[in-house]
Image: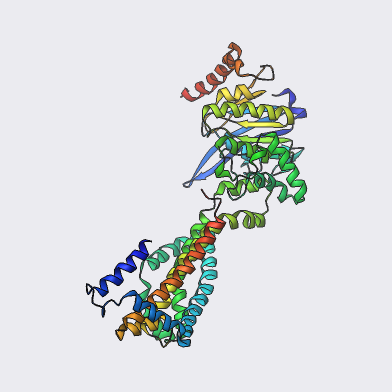
Length: 262
Length: 239
């Protein structure tokens, strides 16, 4: 199904997921298979409740699939693999009792890395996201966009090969969101991680990604994989082009047809 | 300023004959009585007895409250059974059980401590349970994603997230505890600050009574403010 499957970084193999709600079993994901090639920026879009976030949490090793498996370097993921996979959460999930700098240091601290090394790494990461001067601030002293920058710095701190991002800019206003998207591309360009980016914004998906995976409403299935052949670096002007509009329209049609179908 | 003004107004009102000095002695008389009381070794003994009872009671109530609170927060079935009971127990005035405590434990030091524990433990359990349940699960999830072990999740996430609420609980428990201990002393006792206050009231010794009230209020305020200061210090990160 995918030509790059042989050299894939992360493989999702026939993953289904069911969970219990008020005694009923709800099927969230239905036999999803996909491959994430190395150093690619892969988007996952779909209507809310389609299980795209659950899928990402499974890649992070935080939820176990009911069936199927997710494979990294030939080994199924059952628990978090923090040295290889970094995660950025929707709500930033910064520890409010830690400063920005301490938040970025936290994953390194868990690995038992020395104080000086932690500090040096955290400073490099804060510099990368443009917040070097804000290391001493507590999360409640930062704006929504700044919190997400800290979360990105924290996610990259252990130098993982893969960065999983769960609707990281969903809570931000439109303008901040655009700026953050641009920022993320700049950071990605300097680090070249493999990124899996879950979003419900089609514009964001087309603007950021190399390819976009489109999911159906619950139970989530993979509808299509759309190659975003826009040149890089991406610019704001591209959003006004016909090619951009066509790509976004293609994704929209896929999602809409599925939703209106009986 | 306002407090000082009120004291002056009180003094003037008594001297001017607006208030009967036998019912409400002037502040100068109260201050005199306070000075005399504090110079008496018997008074120091009474104060230290009360403080020792309150301290011992809180040292028993808080670890117990912490233990039960965590158990209830971690075990849903246990919580379903005991939570309603706890809420009822919390809403009932503890003072109505005092005669039973006297029957069971007498009127000595131990009985005051037991009643202090009884007065404070419910709030200690409830605030601990709420503090555990209030730890944001998305932060636990984030810590897990970064490779935190079970122990690290408890020490690095649960403890700092709960600490400000726990100190707030300790402060509330302390208020209930002191109230319980002093009330028990007033009801039936041979020593303690509460016992003296009840005695002065009975014998119509108003300057001493008001001086005793001042001492009890002062001690309570000092304890409360110290804990509030701690709470603000460890909770600086809260908005």
